[in-house]
Image 1 (cartoon, helix red, strand yellow):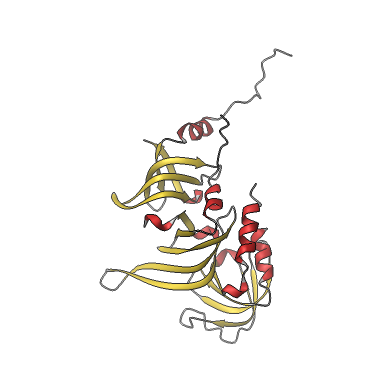
Image 2: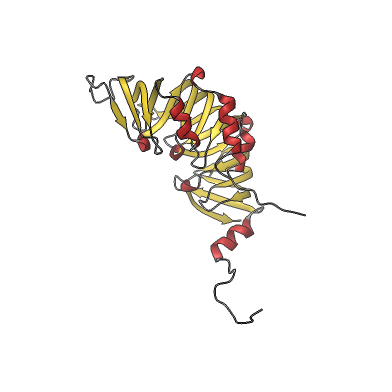
Length: 83
Length: 92
Length: 87
């Protein structure tokens, strides 16, 4: 086995690592249209599609609805933030 | 590919397409492609007020990206077949 | 313990043949039974009820409903999908 240092390797990018780290944690998903979804991030993919559990939907700061399981299409997502 | 096959099963059936601008068009589906561009014959519009008064139009080509919904009857679809195809999935 | 990562589209698989609630662009919502989906979120629902929210001349919130035996919804309109028992 060569012991030369390689730069290719299995380095994971900071955004990808962030996405891995925040699954199963509480997050806020904000959409371009302004809605905020507060819940537990179940899964996320490369398109920023997400599924969440125990989610509360806030519009203009007001609680509108709660969901047990929700899928959000990634193109609508402005950001995903940890809480 | 799943929905392309689905649309191909609807050829020669009457469908109602609702566009993103609210226009509703009923017609006989003649062709569909991978972008869900549709060609309809025997076209009638369901809401004259929004339709650009092309009442003489008999055939149209609809760009897939302008479609919001396609309304169908239960007899046009095999829901079990659709579910199986989705489960098997082109996704995995 | 094997921890297989699930992906978001897996939720659709679980919801097949179940009633779902879909939020769409343009202040629209549809509930119906899910029969088909793909990675673009194109979906086919049966016994669908579409609710359109709008404001009237006095800025009051109004909603109109339309029924459809079977409806194909193009994925680019979809915002979110969930099971409706949370409504």
